[in-house]
Length: 469
Image 1 (cartoon, rainbow, N blue to C red):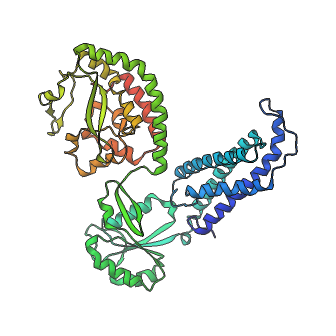
Image 2: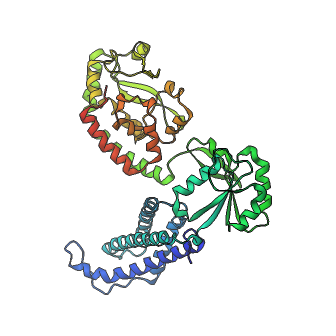
């Protein structure tokens, strides 16, 4: 029986994909003649015969590109949205590659037939994978199909493993219990015994995998556990205690066979970062072109009011704590920062509030620009430079970041944004440094669709002027 995350299933997937490409290529030679009736399709006399080499080349190229994008690595695409997104991107690259090959070799290949082939192949890949996911989900009713996990360590690291298992039920792993010689007093799980009982517990409970999740200062207990497992046919995994030091999540890189843990890995994987950057460049460029007719007159009005500079530049904290110079249209008097202490106040809990309604430093033109959020438009330049994104946590002042709690710094694991969850949930009515939970929600639930949703909501917020002062 095929297991989802097995080598056999990966090979099976390659054969299915290759077979589908070959079959659909042959099918399109039959369907192409039927397309002659369409007014925008050139007439081709049938039957259409393709060189035999194409029936070998097409599946080979497609499967190789899928493999290079790790499409056959099920553990990389646990969520259906992630798998289908990766599949879409890889299919696009495969189609472009095959089009280039045809251009250089078999240029008589019908363009209409090629487009039909790409569309049918893509739909076939999605369909069979969706069906496979459904089959594997139904098979989860049989516990014997799952790997049986025993966790050594009932502390925070062990509980983190449990949470990951709950977050990813498709991994087909069953938790059979814990082993710990000195469990925390608050532990309420299934404690199967101490480390001295490890060998007996593994044999009695049919354990297939043992996860070592003891803190670093328990090295001797970890070594003892490894020695007791040396004679048993189980897989042994180690959760490094350094994971608890990560800003948000970790990534592993290989340095000549030495694993290195990146404790400041971005919350976005390479695919998500690529899509987000492409979206920023396309939409940001269009937005800047549309904004230029507004920015020019607005900058002129700012300059005419007090003959000061139209642009305001300020150091802000960006991704991974990197400082950059954020741009805005100036809405305050030129020496506003020198007067900051005169307008600062504290709320009922003693928190410092640096922005309030009726700030005397704001100019008349500035109030209008803030009301319409026109003063933020120069940040589109920051977006195009890659210092910011269209959507993300708003960049914060370094002086406020110095007062952050460690958990609040997790907002810096993604690029800062022109708008974000804080913007659409109240803006200045909810001081940003006191509401970083909005940004953490964005970090934990990021998707390009969430970006689009926030952008649409931002338009509404700007129109009603909520929290703009």
